[in-house]
Amino acid sequence: MVIRWLFRLYLFWFAVGTVLLTVDWMPEWLRWSNPVFLYLAGAVGASLFVRAYGRLRGIVVTVTIALGAMVLEGVGVHTGRLFGAYRYTDWLGPQVFGVPVAIGTAWVMVVATSHFALRHAVRGWPLPVAGATLAVALDLLLDPVAAAKGYWIWEQTGRYYGIPWTNFSGWFVTAWLLHTAVVLLVHRSDAVPSHAPSRDVESDAFLLLFTVLALFSCLSLQIGYQLPVLYGLIPWSLAFWLKGRKPVDSGREKAMV
Image (cartoon, rainbow, N blue to C red; front, side):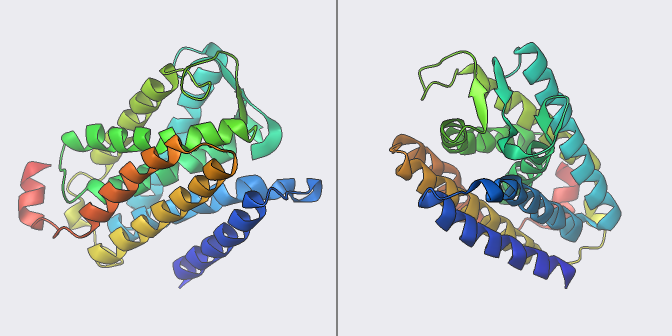
């Protein structure tokens, strides 16, 4: 029940935020709401892990992703070696060592959506590679919009809307490491009782991904960026196609993971 209300709150926040950001009306007194969308998206992502793998393991997976992402982002911010030279502004709320807490929860959303879009079609160690590829495709839409909105500032330029290509290689490495951690943590997870049917978890993961793509597609078109929207269709279409696939037999999945 709590999880369903959490999802409804997220969808409400998504609807309101999409309207306000698309019409470019965000008064100063509403700036606090910017990171809330990422907090809620991360919370929904966490709920997917809990429903699929049990409460304890789901919480461990969520904390691992959030903390791991914060550490890697911190390395990137302070060294410029992972993603390129950049810094966060204060638009995304409280920061730890120069990284907004909301970024950690955003990575939970990214890993959760790509994990559940792929886990029945790609099993075992190929999953982190496929998940990282899907995450990079998603970032081709997210990053130009976020940079244009001033959520972070690039201190070196690149050919893709001013973003250096090192950002996307850094995203691939980060997503690969986080997906690898998930594979390790949910090993033999079929022994963990699930709180929801597999298809329900995948459906909610796809809905979460759809809302993120819809929001950033609207913002991308608003600022005149058409190409990122086309790139956004890649994870959207792939996730929709994989969502309709029959889950693999749990016995076969256990043998291959």
